[in-house]
Length: 277
Image (tube, rainbow, N blue to C red; front, side):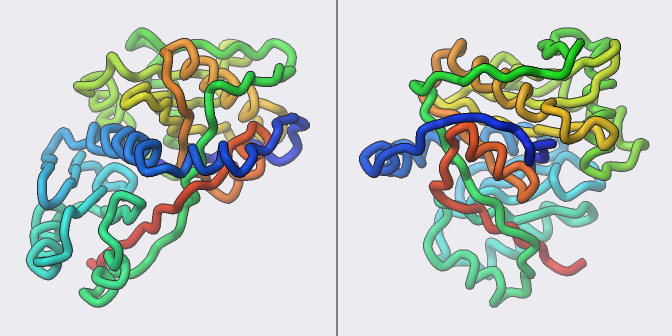
C-alpha cells in the first residue's frame, strides 16, 4: 500500500549512507528479502483468491485497487496467456499490477503492449536498522499504541481508509480481513492516539529479515504536526525489537521527504499498471 505521512516539516538528522553501505542495501540478497516481504504483505489480502507460481496474485474482493493485484510474474515467455489469466482471476474488482525489482526485465513494456496503462511509480526505500533512531518529540498528549485487540481495530481501519479514500461501506470487510490474516504473528499495527482518538496509523510486517512498513496514514485534520514522524520512529523501533536487519517501504510523494530524513534511501522502484475495464 502506498504510504502517506504528514511529513514535510520534521527536523530529523540522519547520516546519508556511504557508497559501500548503499551497495549493501541494493545488493541482490537484500533486494530479494525486501521484495519477499512486500509480496507476503500484499498477498496476505488475498482472502477471496490468491496464487503463487508463474503468476503471484491476490484478490480480496474489495472494490479498491490497493487490495487486489499481481505482484510478480516469473517469466515473460507466455506473457499474453499470463496477462489473460490475471485479468480472468481479477475480473470484477479494480486491481493493479506491481512491477518491481523481482519482475523480469521487460515486464513493463510487455504489459503496455498488451493494453495496460501505467498508474504511478513508487520509490522503494530501505534503511539499515543498525542505525540509531533519533528522538522525535511528538505532539503533547500523543501516544503510539500497538493495536492488539479487536475493539480498536475498526477505528484503525476507519482512519487509514478515510485517508486512502476508501468507501466507508468497505470498512467492516477490511476489519474482517485484517483480523484473519494468516501472517498476523508477523504483524504489528500501530495507532497514533490523541485525546483517546486514533489520528494516525502504520503497520509493520517483520518477515524475511525485513521490517516492511505499510499504511502510514495521518488524518487530514492532524497533518503537519509531527504525527507521521512519531509513527515512523515507532515502526523502526518495532523492526529493531523484532530483530530484523532492514526497514523498507514504498513511499508516496508526500511521505518521501520525511523518510529521507529518517535515513531511508531509494534502492529501486515499483511501477503500477492497470488494464482498462
